[in-house]
Length: 157
Image 1 (cartoon, rainbow, N blue to C red):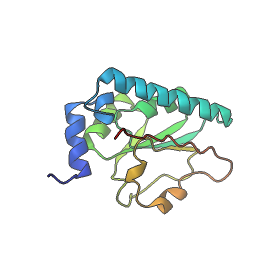
Image 2 (tube, rainbow, N blue to C red):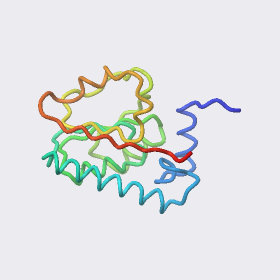
Image 3 (cartoon, rainbow, N blue to C red):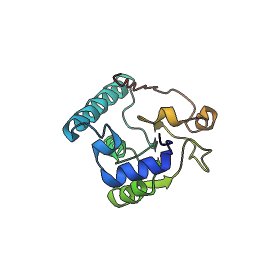
């Protein structure tokens, strides 16, 4: 049995499949993974609208992967977007695809060097199980009213 080493696993996975399957379920069709993300995007959009969040000014996306959520925040008109990802592969590709977004390569399972403070929204989609120090993320969100959205995913089995 091999040992799971997150940075190596994700570099290999995204190196082989830098698409919805690479960040979703690699054994399932890309169309399934795309449909799953589209459903999540619609759900989060509806929840934000219901909470009265129309246009967050400053956003941090943790685990940016292929940029699905970066694109979501850009379409919502966010003025400033910051992205973190574990892999060199993702950060390099994201910088090419989204030149106006600041990306950093960080392992959120370890203490993160410099999280930007005062964010209106923080998206941590499908990576919450990797956050081991909740207190480090508390200072990231701007004080005041907020919308808390939890996207739960239960794998079959």
